[in-house]
Amino acid sequence: MKAKKKWVKSYHSIIRNIAEKILGPYCRFRYNVTIEKFIPDKKQPYLILMNHQTAFDQFFVGMAFRGPVYYVASEDLFSLGFISKLLSFLVAPIPIKKQATDLNAIKTCVKVSREGGTIALFPEGNRTYHGKTLYFKPSIVKLVRLLKLPVIIFKVEGGFGIHPRWSDVVRKGKMKVSLATIIQPTEYSSLSDDELYHTLCDYLYVDENLSLENFYHKKSAERVERFLYVCPHCGLTAFESKNDLFWCKKCMDKIQYLPNKKLSSTVEKSSAPFTDLGRWYDYQCDFISNLDLTPYEDTPIDQYRVKIFKVILYKKKELLFSHGLLSLYGNRITINDISLFFDDISSITVLGKNKVNIYHKDLVYQIKGDSSFNGLKYVNIYHHYRNNKRGNNDEQFLGL
Image 1 (tube, rainbow, N blue to C red):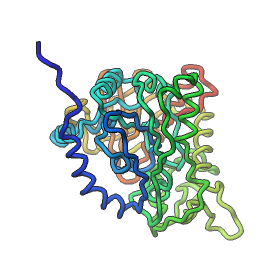
Image 2: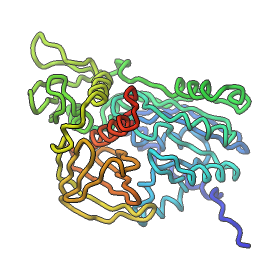
Image 3: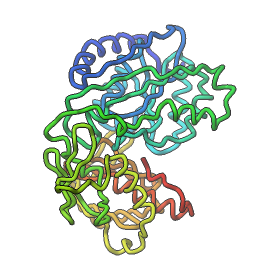
Image 4: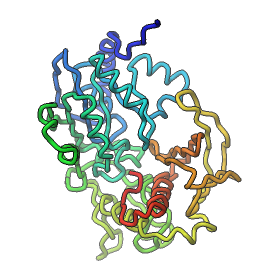
């Protein structure tokens, strides 16, 4: 009988050390990050949890933890052909389907832990758009109990100020990655599932809007239209931005994004509708959660010209349309003349800054828009529809 291949390889330690020598100085220079080190017991595997603020958070884990780490990563990373194969060989990340219960990912985590490997994941599954730690599913508790590993929690602070998810530019400022706590199995075994979940939430929660640290860049507001799409004066809309200003394309109300992440009106003796993007996000979610989608079953909420790919999971992507017409309705998404009804979609998730994956029956479509494309809108409207369909009228979770 052929022996099963090991996931944990001895050369992963060598790759990790080389990567730190190369990427460590770059990360520190680019993000001006201070990282608290943790030196593990070499014979003890761990489960590492972190909140998610920047595209480099996984590298910060590698710099904080002395030893190879096996990262749970979105399946999109495994659909890049040769690049995916190279990454799998070098660092062996664990693939997982976003916004879905992935039994294969859970089995792989168990396999890695039994082989003595340390696992790292971001419970939120997404980077924050607005500076606050996102909702994550209580099912993380089941994984903690299944693996029976000491849980290390690292907290990222200042990352949203340095490089917001919606922005293309890195600002001048400071951020840090610190060790929040270590929870031993003997400690969490005595907690109920609800107690353990809220303990994890408390340690992982950060609200960057409460900090008044300054982060400087002349283009600090540019591309906020990837995140905002509801105006308190106009409702559903689109925004434009330039330098440190952004404005609604309907009412043209201009807002300035300040170095301390606060918002200010450009009109004399007038105040911005919200003090920060965190509060604007809360308003946007409330607006969508109370939006009647019926009028939009015939009239599109949004239309955009985008690139459309078919994703062959864990292999590659095939371009279907280089300039396809994407339309968002109250009960479906259309791609040219293809209708993808929400009832037939198992999940919609936003990737990076301007990509969206649509899981429709047994197919996965990836939408890639231009630099102003707002993928969050598609995720929020889909989840609002599903909440209404299930009778969850009080449910506020809109996908992130």
